[in-house]
Each structure stands twice: as C-alpha cells, then as structure tokens.
Image (cartoon, rainbow, N blue to C red):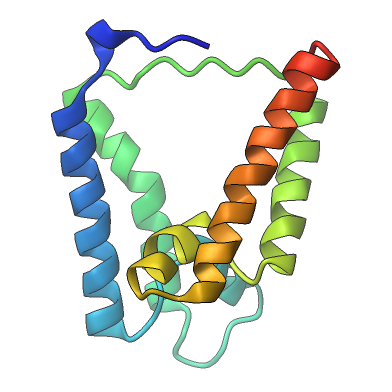
Length: 144
C-alpha cells in the first residue's frame, strides 16, 4: 500500500475530525447519549417508547450526508477488492464483533476515548490490532 501524497488533504481531514468530535460532543451534551452507530441502529431493532424518532433521524442523516455532498462535489471513487460473499462475511463478522465488544468504533473510538473510558481504549486497541492482523494474514500469508 502506498500513500498518494499529491492527494493527501490534511486540512480537510482535520476539519472532518473536528466536525465529528463536535457532533459527538453535542450529541452527548444535548441528548445524553453516546453517538455510537451500532447502539443507535440496535435501538431501532428493539425500539422503546419515544425512542424511535431521533434514531431514525440519526441514521437518515448518515445516509443523507453523502447524497447532499454529491450535489456539490463528486464522491471519491470507491474501489473494493472483494466479492459479494466476502463483503457479507465481513459485515457479519463486524456485527458479531460489535456485539461482543459492546459497541463499535464510533462508540468506543470517538466517544469512549474522548471520555477517557479504559474499556473503550482497550476495545479500540483490539479493533485496530485485529484489523492489522487480518490484513497481514489475508495479504501476506494467504496472498489474497
């Protein structure tokens, strides 16, 4: 893997990270909830009374944001080097890992670490280590 330094955009990356951090902070301050996508989506699967509208709005915003962005700019080209079966398997494994880890990367990595949660620090380190190990095994050991 190589980095295309001509396409490296540190200022937009910094701005994007700041917006994500600000949104997560506002969400916890104004709503009293963690902006972890798996928890928000999971709550829609077993909804509680008066708990559906904000969850639908949150997920709708995740879907609408790139569509709105696309009105003003071209979306970056996505290149996925996997077949449909591998994508389904990967999605299932992420879902299982999210359940066992009691949260996803947005919940632990963004919100948990910012609250100095030791559990979230450990979970995020495990996420990154598992991802690195998976890439190493698939690319360098199995040659896929």
